[in-house]
Length: 91
Length: 91
Image (cartoon, rainbow over all chains, first blue to last red):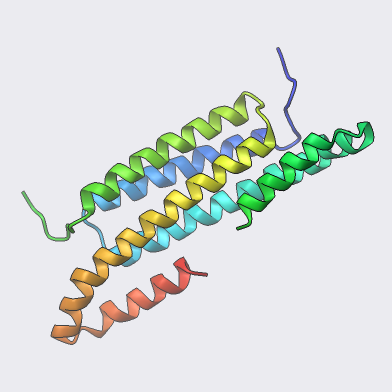
């Protein structure tokens, strides 16, 4: 099995993504059923928090593994890409 | 057909929810395939923006319809619920 870019928390990230997708499907159903807008907004806010948490885990895994390796080997592109990604994610 | 709580943009919201769900499934696949963390972060950021846009549309529809009706009929609970939802969504 090829395993070139898996991290400590890859399984946890996949599980969280599955839960977030299920959550989005439930919210879509709320909209289809014409449920209360305030309730829908609160659920959208919850799924957004879940995505933020997933982003944090991906970032931490990345820093703990790829970035440490990149610094050791002097690979500037990995650091540049990381800075771009952080700038987009934290805006 | 029962249609007690549908808004002008309900169809658009459902379509955007479907696209966001497809996007999240694609991101999950990126994680499963061990793709680059920076690329995953950028896609998570994009789907979060999509969720923010959906929230804005739901909120605008809600204000244009339910809230206007609630003010006319003096229904304070609708306004209280809206304030709670906004507080959660904009934090």
